[in-house]
Structures are given as C-alpha cells and as structure tokens.
Length: 270
Image 1 (tube, rainbow, N blue to C red):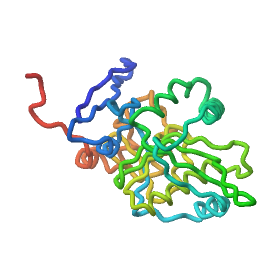
Image 2: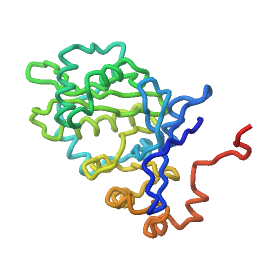
Image 3: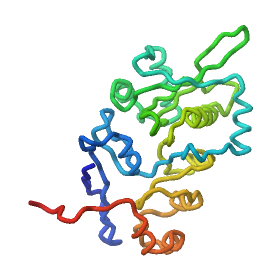
Image 4: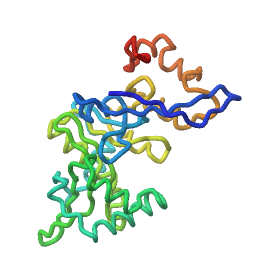
C-alpha cells in the first residue's frame, strides 16, 4: 500500500502536529490487506482508506460467553443468511426505512440518501446479511439487514446494520451482530470486522471473546486499554507521551519492536 499523511489541526502550545494517515492499495493488494493493517474504507470504491481504531474478532478463537449465549437464547426464531448484493432487491421501501433508522440511530445528516445509494452501488458492499424471523404459520419476515464487505474466507466487514427498532426483542441489534459472529465462524472466516470504537456507546462490541482493536502500533486485545483510550483527553498530549499507556504496553522499546508498521529505507524523493 502507499501512504499519504493529511495534516490536521496543529496545536503549537502542546507540540501536537497531527496527521491523518491515508492509504491506497497497490495492484497486488486486496482490501483485506489494508483492513489487516488497521485501515478502514474511506470511499465506496475502496480506492482510499484511513487508519483508525477499529475492532475485529479472531473467529478461530471465539468462544461464546454467558452473555453471548443469553443474547442467542433471546434470538430464538431468528436466523441470518448471506445474500449477494446483486441478488438483493434494494427497494424504495427498504431505502426509506434504512434512512429513517439512520436518522434516529446514527444522528441527523450522518447517512443522507446519496451516501446510502453510493454504498449500495460501490465496491465496498459485496453482500448483505439478512436477519429473518420465522413467525406463526411459517411466515418469514426480514427484520434486519447488514451491509457487508466479504473476502472469503479471509475477512468479513460488518459495516452498517439496519433493523426493526419496534421489534419486541429490545436487543435485536446486538442479537444480529452475535448471530453474525457465530455464522462467519462456522463458515470458516478468519476475521469479522465490527467497525470503529471511539465512544463508550460503542463498547458493546467488545463483549466478544478474541476481540482486538487497532492502534498506532498494530492490534491489541487489551479491552481495559481500549476503555482508557476512549476516556483520555486526546487534546492534552500525544498517546506515546502518556506514562500510563507506555507502562501498560511495556515501554517504548516494546512498542518499537512490536509495531507492524515499517518504512523501507531509500523512500525519499528521486
């Protein structure tokens, strides 16, 4: 991959000179290579990615916890199935329902119609994960759908989920995610990516065993460290200047030796 560094909001008083790290894949790479390095799609066509704090589950090591099993018991009668995007009928009714869900769940203006349409017609969505409920009389009703990017069997990205907010199961969203973890583990996938985690509200994603998150040196499985990152004042100083972080990670030398990021020598101009 090739990297680009986009300068952002410097604070000279604290010696903070931030850069956002962007990446673009090279011809021999697939998007899974960039996901594996901690990057997240920044365009529907998968030609631009940004480095961010995202979560994934190592599916070969996942074991359901008592809480996972409780959620699955409440999800009796629900099942998930993978549908190729080309085979999924993107009706105006579904579009309207998803936009209404996004307005309520994600916030005003986060998912305008143009963005949803771009996702549904871009390379970033290869499949949808349908959540189907079997009701009395054998009727099957779609109660949720997840936009997904799949590279079998290497990775699956659980991108945006839309579901029936009025469903009697008040944990329907978490149930769909838990069913997805179980489904892709059973299908033999290596990783399921669950999106980013920058707030307390997103910590529900950490309840899966064998979860790890990307940080500036690679992947970490320390959930307590993730909580610390969310609660720290990022405007105060760089993370690598935080004594608590350095101590938890074994010090500067351990971080230096353990980082997955390297630049080849001789990469200057010319």
